[in-house]
Length: 164
Image 1 (cartoon, helix red, strand yellow):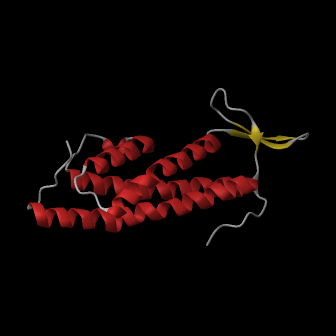
Image 2: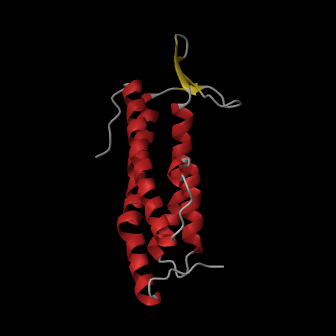
Image 3: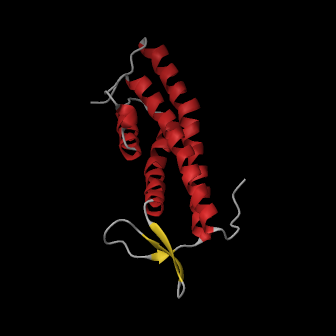
């Protein structure tokens, strides 16, 4: 069930934080499943930034031979998920100020980004998008990747082949 905007900017910001954390957990599950299939383990991979994990997931899956349609669909979700997390970063690392003339304002922490109105509707919309973005990750980690690994293991005698 989607969150409804109740006009509370700070509560909406809290949902952005919470739902982004849920999404990151789902990405970590995909990351672990990909590592299990690829058999690669680099020290401290679990400490990588989420953008680096998404890049690793995409590159690893694209290197697998005979990738399934459901994995291809997931790969197409990776960039939009990264974009959502980038929007989250702009909000979370920005500052919200009350301006008596213009209303609440979000001042991004990044140089060169303009101030924008801070609206509860934007927070709730992003929170809902972050929450929905978990679904492809859960589907990939719980079903698509294990199915792919089982099929490859049965055909290749426990050897996952990679493209060139």
